[in-house]
Amino acid sequence: MDETPREVLVVEASDDDVPAIGSFFWAMWHEAGADAPGFTGATEEIIAEIAAPDAIRSRIGGPERRMFLAYRGGQVVGFAAAKTRNEDEIELAGIVVLQAMVGSGVGTSLVQAAVQACRKLGFAKMTVSTEVDNQRAVAFYQARGFRLAGESTAEVAGTVFAVTNLSLDL
Image 1: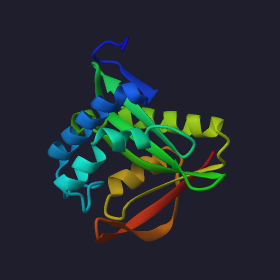
Image 2: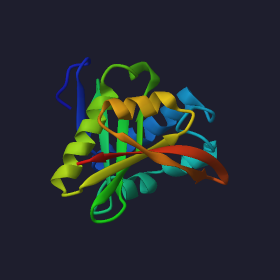
Image 3: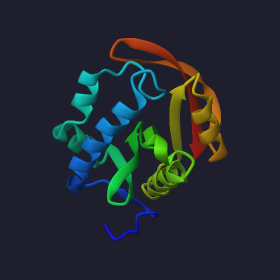
């Protein structure tokens, strides 16, 4: 990586990034805990599954999925993942930033990279969902052009919770 410790570099993930992504997932889990927004229903076993190299490889590229990484000082400090819903719509399936980096622009850089890449791929709309009680995330997405699109429920490992849905025309 050609970056100074203060600069953040956003790249689309590749196989070379797999170990760094796994380390990031574990760091996030230990930093945030199971009750943090974005981790509802997650357990150590679930984190172990998603941090496994084969699981990461299955999510970092290809026609259905994209993953974007924010590096600072050679370490992953945030990621965004997108997955195809249909030929016109893609879901921003997750965006996570280390607590120490919240408010530094990493999240914005990740959203911008995902939006730009998905526009180039020809998608017309991007959606994102977050827990209803995570008003910080709702405000974050709205400040970046997403608009409210209703509420629904989601399930993670048998835990059902309410989510706010947002969308952005690309």
